[in-house]
Length: 160
Image (cartoon, rainbow, N blue to C red; front, side, top):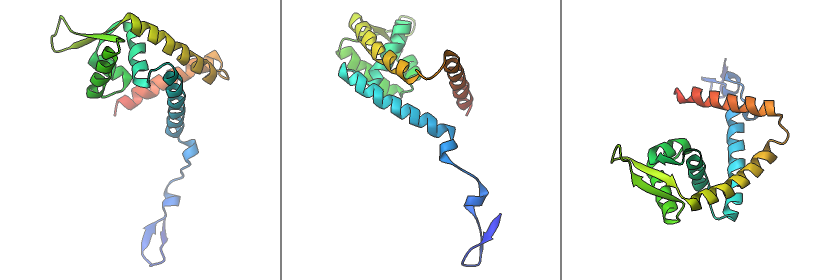
């Protein structure tokens, strides 16, 4: 509904066009939870000399043992060029090894090293402690429902 402005022309009343409360916006809470989690993880990982990107790479490689840079990039939600630099840094630290794919020489395969596995275990201990504390007020059913809903939301957003 339009209202009369002081100048006399008709301008829409934006407050009446939509009812918006940021505290009822689900993406606000997702962003807030993510930022809080990342802040806690940065501090925890910093104590063991690692960072969030390294944690992500190590957790992916722990599950898969080896993966292409592009696959790691996709699962880590990091641009390929940035992921390449992260993995090069991790190779220099002895956490991973890079090699060319035998099937396709254009593809770089990343493999976790023994030192990477140890660092990954240290990361996982920190991550598990944070996970347990964050979800201590959730039932196992609530945790499963939340995970299923987040997967569903991610799939829905992926269609854009």
